[in-house]
Length: 184
Image 1: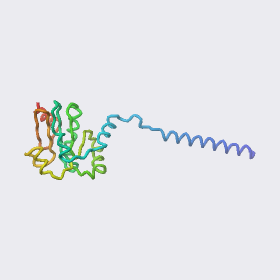
Image 2: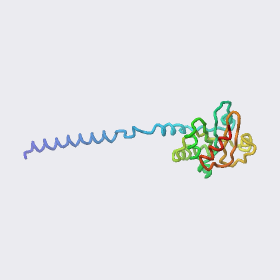
Image 3: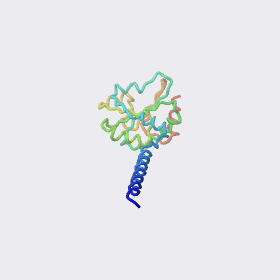
Image 4: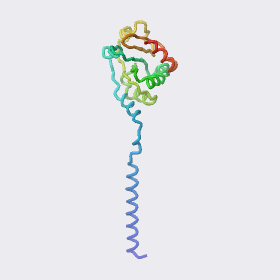
């Protein structure tokens, strides 16, 4: 093989190798996740910005003049009974989209990004979450329900005509459904 043919072959091999590298690079940059579940994206977006309220800002959320039914659940990540009932609340909301659910976290505002958001994502919590940060708990607990000891989980179910209070966890989806029937 002469020097000219050998040089030509090396150059051809380099061109092929270069083309192959470009091809591999283009394929690896292709977005293979184009078929993402839009429901999951919507739910993740819902809790991207978790509002932090003091009680005066939060209080209007627990009253209504509309015919809509609401469930407001007070909970925290460190509360085992609270965490246990969250899947029942999620299932209820999926089955009854006409009922608005608000999960009121009593965790620390400093933990929203580092603990609360990852927790919500891991547990697939899709309902609206707000954080109540008001140090005067003795005052606002009595404003919600004078019979509430302050223990969580605590749930309010209400519409414009009736209010029900539960200082306990729900043991199943059926338990939650049976209690909300009492509003009507």
